[in-house]
Image 1 (cartoon, rainbow, N blue to C red):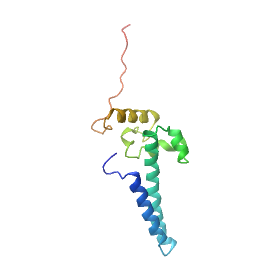
Image 2: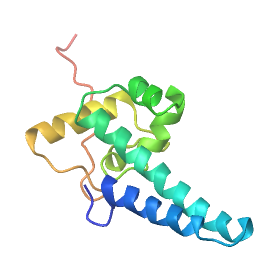
Image 3: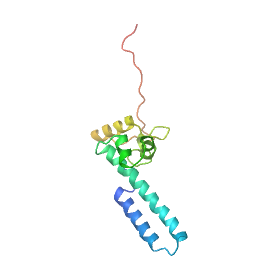
Image 4: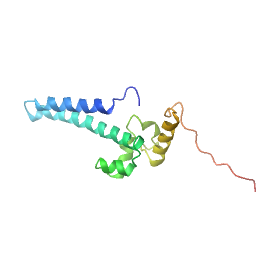
Length: 131
């Protein structure tokens, strides 16, 4: 995981602190920005938990979406924002089944995730024989 990306536990702790602060607010107007902050931390935690489910526990994109009460089409863009899967996102900003397979394979071999300086080599067509 990226060093500057908070882990799941810290995201949940941040959300809990925000909710505690919102509970002490004197009015709904004061509580609203703090509740939005908590919601943002929870959304990031959900995204990171989906990434962990897909990478570490072998869940499919569809299963992760069902567990998070999201449509399958909503999962790819959310996973593309996670620390673990953002290096595998397509140029359109989505994580696909093949992206997840590549991430699992790299993790299994102990390879680091691709970086902008180290993108995966493009696939090339090679003819089997001259005709």
